[in-house]
Length: 256
Length: 256
DNA sequence: GAACAAGTGTACGGAATGCGCACACTTAGG
DNA sequence: CCTAAGTGTGCGCATTCCGTACACTTGTTC
Image (cartoon, rainbow over all chains, first blue to last red):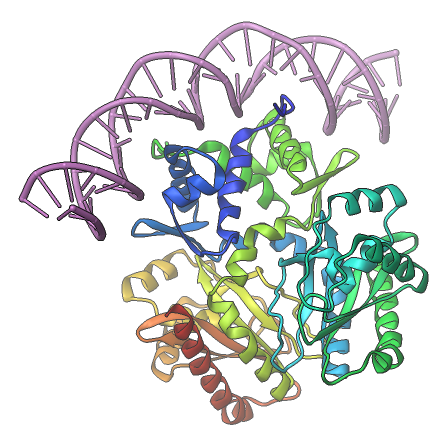
């Protein structure tokens, strides 16, 4: 039996569980669905749902609940504080505009990469991710950059828990091959992932460093049809590195 | 004494209050600061902070706490569900790229407009707002469009509570003048706000309608130096209206 | 249309959870 | 050295939240 510290407020955990229940697919949920998803009794789930509705984070629509825009308030300060995404926005914009490709900034959160800022190129994009979304780190260029920079013990612990999966025929879904790839990434300081998560999409990523601290990873995502890997390295990599340095400098400056 | 319904879970309210405390300026807060901001005892605030840290939404840094990227999870489903921002993204991109100006989508939340999607033009922008941010509705083009479309009783209730304030010398900080302006906005179906919130910035907004339902407001923000009001109306307004219709259609289609 | 299943809202007694006082300790400043 | 303002921790008690139980609505099956 897992033991919680004695300061632990269980209602907090349940509150968050209820809010997160809306992340799994459906945007509208009934009391029973939430109860099942969060492993509570119906009566309990109902209390939290009604409370959150009273507070304005959910709205009741007949017998279903949905999130209101107010839920964005909760994360707003992370995005608009003097933090990383703020420092990165302008540089992502330049990249996206100059290269006409989508550019993103991610951090590592558990086994996933988490998008904290993203500027999309004005063409239809295959992957429709937005800020706050997650993707499995091991299968993405940004993820590999971030994992490769972890301390050995942490990287090992990551790899022990990783759930490999074959998304496309290009996916490197073998643990040993992934280890070798990570070694390469660490040595060369960048990662190119070729259609491993989504057919037709290549991603190039570099780490964003400030002094010795790893802040996140910067990425450009291009359609496979239009660019061959060699051209990507030649043209995009220098731009990406330049932007990464600029972001780190901006971020550092804001701390002062 | 305000009376809560008997289903009300107080810990939920406190949990959210603690998370929102980080929205007010500082990104790092101590136990005492949070206690003061949320009107709790220190012991209580500490319980919630430690619990949220255990759950991974905050991280302790010495004796201060800060938000982790994980807080973005809470609102992620609102942004990436089959909802309005999703439908709008592609259209905002086209607008921003074609016109080389920043384009945004907002909804009304209480007295504020809340940014739910935004595509920035690749030039430095005066206002650095990001998704989830709020601005006072009455002083913005999007806000005025949204207020103008409210039912009479709601609009009246809004205006009763509004706190006017002079931001620049152009600000219309007079209630009667604002009322007249809202009437004009409702009749003409768009709003042009000229440097009322920020010197040097003009905003043009139109409502996004789906059948008879008001979904939000769409905006283009331009630098005052580069565009005169007449040119904005002639060139930008048609594009904006077109995009608004397209977004509404897209949004409707997704509901089916 | 009776019988049933699966959803909904509501009530209430009692356990246990979270409350906040109180104390001990650290740091900084006069 | 003493105060002031912060920090962490323990603990008894009141409150809060739990979950069972029941009544009701809805839609399906036979």
